[in-house]
Length: 120
Length: 200
Image (cartoon, rainbow over all chains, first blue to last red):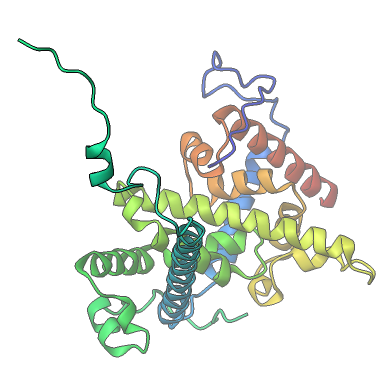
């Protein structure tokens, strides 16, 4: 995310045209601009890239990318293992005796008193 | 610094990703067709824009421009799948180089401030001697004054007068409004003019 500097400055409002100067140009500004262009061009002309720059940079990208994937894989494995262990522990905490729903045998219940039935 | 001073005009063509994947020791990281496409795209970008990005980092005053530019390319390498328009990659790279250089300079300033040693002379932030050896005295003074400007003003001036970008493009690269670009440019030129007039 980039931070946008929206602070209004004097003479830079949206109602101003692009050709209008922000501040009165000091005398000699044109000459300074020309000299600045020449100086920047001269300085940039002295910079020559290393012929092996791509190979070096690519090796570094791949190394970092591989390390990032490795860290991500380890993180996912740790989270999965933790979730599994917690699940097993919770299941292990359940009572071992049978529940009340199936308590008793069916024969005793059949021999007991039943509700009176409506006769036709 | 690793930059070479011999008269080499352009980078040699970057190796094709398939060949690099097969030959290099880190080849197995490139597996699917999406990876191959990404490799090819980044290699093309590297061949097209590496020199200009390196020069931009130097002109902005980075002390380790190769690392700054390599980091910018790594950012685009990582986010390649989210890049909607390949044509916008140059602007993204430019913006990343500006931000990384600014962060690097700020980090160095903070580190120097907290060092126990006496602060380094201000000349250290000027471009290295090997780069300025061929410059005239006036140009050296001008670049010295440029390096002492606030980072935003320096960026706006370099993007305007070296890359020749429009205000809207500079605003996009720096993440500020067009009005701020005008202000930074105007103030920067005024400060440089004052420095040069004092010398004359």
